[in-house]
Image (cartoon, rainbow, N blue to C red; front, top):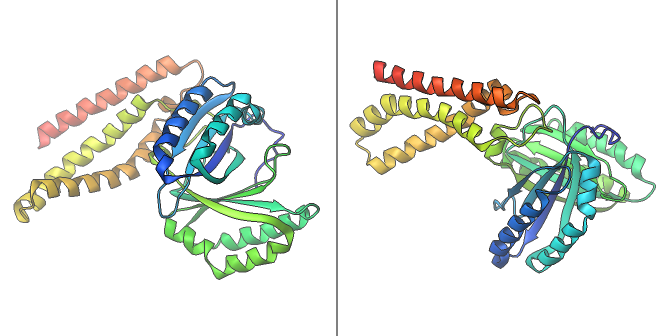
Amino acid sequence: MSASRTDTTHSVSIVTQTCVRPERADDFARWQGETSSLIQHFPGFIEQRLLPPAPPLQVDWVILQRFASLADAKRWLGAPERQNRIAGAAPMLVGRDDVHIVEDESSGIKPAPVSAIISTRVKPGREAEYRAWEQKIAAAQSKAPGLQGYRFEPPVPGVQEDFVAILRFDTEANLKAWLDSPVRRALVEEAAPLTEEFHSRIASSGFEQWFRDGDAAGAPLSAWKMNMLVLLMLYPIVMLFGFFVGTPVFDRMFHLPFAVSLFLGNVVSVVLTGFLVPWIAGHFRWWLQPAPGRELRAGLQGAALIAALYVAMVLAFLHFF
């Protein structure tokens, strides 16, 4: 269950899911870029992420906008600037948008590979019954394979009239298995007399989940810092894999063409980097998100340390290989 919304010390995210006409995808991307430039200067804005469709599971565009407080998010939703932008996008869209406000958790839970956002409009006077039903389905889905987290968000008067449930799963297959399961279908049918409208949309996460941890309300992470950490993990992986596997196995033993050998090496490198970057990012949290007043000192110290590690790795590989 989410905490009370009276605490505005946590940042909040506006999650917008919208279906774009296929022939207008490029126009919508340009429109969203212009909107991103506009929102950058809006009071309380922290960051924005745009997730394009990833068929067949995610067919919507997903826009995530983080603000310093619920009040800031509400002001953006009602701002004339936003209303004018929405009016200009209407010819590009199919159906209605789903717009939800979600309070960010101070624990900074990492986004899962795939999530479902389920909106429910409850009949007036049936809210207490619906909350009791929600506890039943939460208990049932806690046993679903691959479930990584569950959030339940009540309505925000004047902004969001729906109850919102957010389910996070490790794979698309496990999410789909739960959504289509007989247990869930029976529970959804049980709630039908309590609800006016019910629908779900699915969103996938990207590479940024490698670095999402710690202080959820912190400033956006610097691209150059993230790139330095990726290189810190990628270089030894490529070097060691090439020396112990690529050259002796792919080249000498199987005589694979260079293009094939390089492709296989890249596959292994991406997979291993995906495991190691979150680990190293956790150890460099003090550098990625330094305490207020220590940004310059921490930035220099972290960059110097990583540069020293680069040099140490190069010298070690030169010596041993």
